[in-house]
Every structure is written in C-alpha cells, then in structure tokens.
Amino acid sequence: MPMEIFMKPPNTVAMISIFRLILFFSIPHAVLTLSTFTKLQLPSNVFGPDSLAFDQQGGGPYTGVSDGRILKYEDSSSAFTEYAYTTPTWSKEVCEGIIEPNLGPTCGRPLGLGFNYQTCELYIVDAVSGLVVVGPDGGLATPLATSAEGVPFGLPDALDVDQRTGKVYFTDASSVYGIREIIQAVGNNDATGRLLEYDPSTNQVTVLMRGLSGAVGAAVSKDGSFVLVTELFANRTQKFWLKGPKANTSEVLITFQGRPDNIKTTANGTFWVAVNTGKFLLPTSPTGQEIDADGNVLRTMNFEAEYNSTLISEVQERGDACLNLYVGSLLANFVGVYTLNN
Image (cartoon, rainbow, N blue to C red):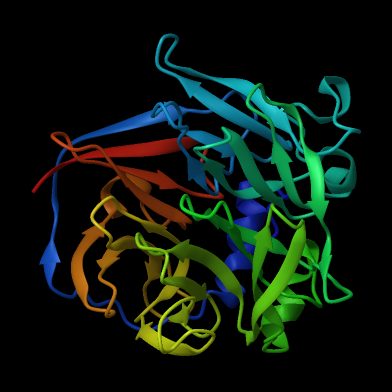
C-alpha cells in the first residue's frame, strides 16, 4: 500500500512511478480466464479501497477509503454504506469526500483490516491512528496501540487475524517514515519495517521481525503455524514461523518479478498476492499471483483489461461453487470483482 494516498489519484500516479521500480513482466505457470467483471462503485469523490474484509456471515466487502471512513457494501442496495471511522475528530462536514493531505490526523486513513469471527470485532490499521478495533455495531474505533518496544509506528499498513487464537498480525511499513514521506523512504532504501503481533488477551504488542524493506502485507497460514509478510522494496515475501521446530525464525519464501503488496490466505490454504509488474519507470501491469506455502506460483491473473496500468493493492478469493476474486486499489473508485472459469 505505501504511497501518498491523501493526494488526488493523478498526483499519486506520478509519485508512484518514481519508486515502483520493477523488473520485466513475466507470467509463471497457469493463467486464469474470466467469465464476468463487476465494479462495486464507491460513493462520489471517494477512492482508494486498499484492503478488503468480510464478516462472519460473508457480508461485505468492508474497506477503508480516502476520506477516512470504513465502508460496507450492502447487497440489498448494491451500494456502499458508512460503517465506522478511526478518529474521534472525523466529521461529515470536514472529512466526507474530501481529499486533503493535511486532514489525515483529523479524518484518519484506514488501510489493512480484518474480522475476528468469534467476537465480531473489526481490527484496523490506520496510517495515522495505529492499531484500532471496531465493535460489532460499527461506529468509532477504540485505539489499541501506536508503538512497539517504545518505537512509534511510522506507517501501519497490513493486517490479518488468526481465527484460532484471536491474535492480530500486522505490519509497520516503516518505523521512520510516515505516509507522506514514502518517497524519502524509497530514496533512502528504508529497511525499518516490522512485523508485529497483538494479543487481545494481554493487550501487548510483540515485534516478530525487524529490518523489513517496506512491509506492506501480512497473512497468517490456515493452520496458524506461520505468517507471511511481503516486502515492497525487496520484491519478496518472507515466512515467519510461529510454531514447530523453526518457531521464531524466518526465511525468504519467494522473490517476485515485480512489486508485491497485500497478501491474503484462501480457504484452501494458498495465498493471493497483488503484484504490480512492468518495465522500469513504464506503466504498470497489475496482476494477482496465487502461491502455495512453499512459494510455488500456482496461478497468475492479469488485470490490465479492466485496470489498464492502474496499481492494485490486494487480491482476495471468495466463494465455493462460484469463485470470485475481489481486487483493491489505492487509485480506483471501485472494488473490482472477477468471476473465474477454473
């Protein structure tokens, strides 16, 4: 997700072209084909559905957007409605539909999010407010953490919840640079990102990994034995072991020919990674790559036909008989939904 997301999309694209320095495009293994593509349109003057979440009944998607709100898509009305917000200073008059960089501390900017299905709580990492949680009825979030080991969060970015333990795994993309300083982070080859664990039973945050190069994605495995973390600047995903003989150690799982962003676990235990690929300083080719727990690329999907060269931030798989891929993007004013032919 790391980019100047309080700016208007055209300015953001110009900034992104500076630091999305990627290798030549390649498509490994199987390529998926589509049957339909649907846009879930955001409200007027709102954009940037970076990450997506679904509640325990399958409702949603829920997503954080550019004016600081968390919205929920309602099938009954085929529209997004307001669900929550992350700062007590958010107001309709000041924030709704407004794109103003200086309003970040007032309005917030929610990024990664995920539900605890047992408690019906929605956990959110906000680029300004840190780790917060929203109760089952939505509304104002409750602050949980803004630092770890005495070091404030610079750019909280991605999040996942272990449904077995209730623990929350999230990333701080940089512990030095904030959301409006991402270009400096790239220029200085920042490697101060962290993978963190929040335990709701103790309200404690533990640092699991340090020295990460743009930690922008986190996904816990289906069995809870490891967490994957994507590094935007290093073009790779690392595996941190939570259990077993390798517990508390990490290893590089896969290096991409492109810049990986959010990563999401599937019902089958595989993972979808949003990967933006292309030639150096040329328009982006947005793709999704499904990988297994050993880092093998199982399938690749190219989204250029619908997104052109727009950067995407997340690919999430939902459904059984009908397989859908939901796509998030910090530059789009909609959530894309692909129905696949396997």
